[in-house]
Image 1: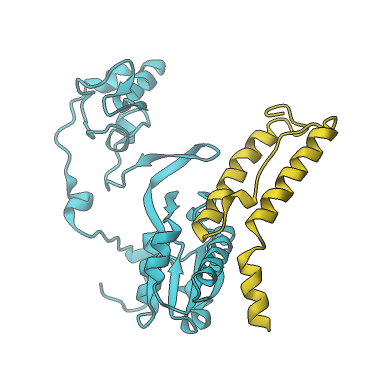
Image 2 (image 1 turned 90 degrees about the horizontal axis):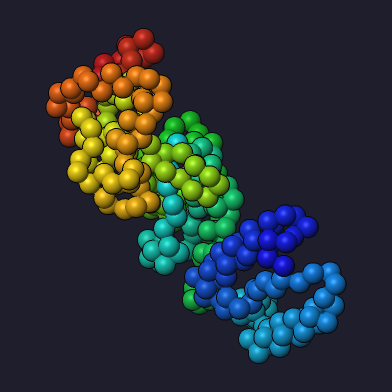
Length: 76
Length: 227
């Protein structure tokens, strides 16, 4: 949970860095939702499954990374 | 240190324009320690440019390198070949670094990737504050080591203005009053009598008002050189 991290304030710091990474993706022209952070403890297996499902659905909806598509096209 | 921050990717893209080959050149000194233009930032900006140009349908060939100091010719010599092979150099150095590249490689096109902000220090990780205005005639010995030029919004020399309230400057509650800091420092040291000396108007000729500045040290010069 925020501020209650094995690395003390590590997950609070990580939250800021994830926001910066999202901003980078947006500037580049990619969807910032491709990266996300969820707070879970090691005892929250069910919630982990939910988060994994949510992220998988989100990424599936967004589709493949367009940079990889153009890379494959250029290789053909 | 000289403190700078990166321009937006949009502005960088506009500056680089239609150039196909780009060298992102970092600097290993001030802008490395303020996380604006070191080797890590150069690699990130290069990756950003590669990715965004690809998405725009006009992929650029973007490489990156970092020299120890962009503001000295001999360090720039190390990247002369790389500079010669690109259409544009995106400098992640301070304004001095950008101009050093422009002077050293007069046939190369160089653009700035940073906005150079001030002389300052980190007061905590991720926070930098101005401390020196480079006025050319240091008076810190008269003010308890707190600079009234850089830290008083009006650069006053003989105490605070009427906008000093509860230790804050009138421009913003987040800005401490420079003269309150000076008073508190001297008071804690029992040296308030220092403030009884009235400072005469400062000559700003030593600052930017005197035009571009230059220092010549004859004891350090080599050979038969005239300036």
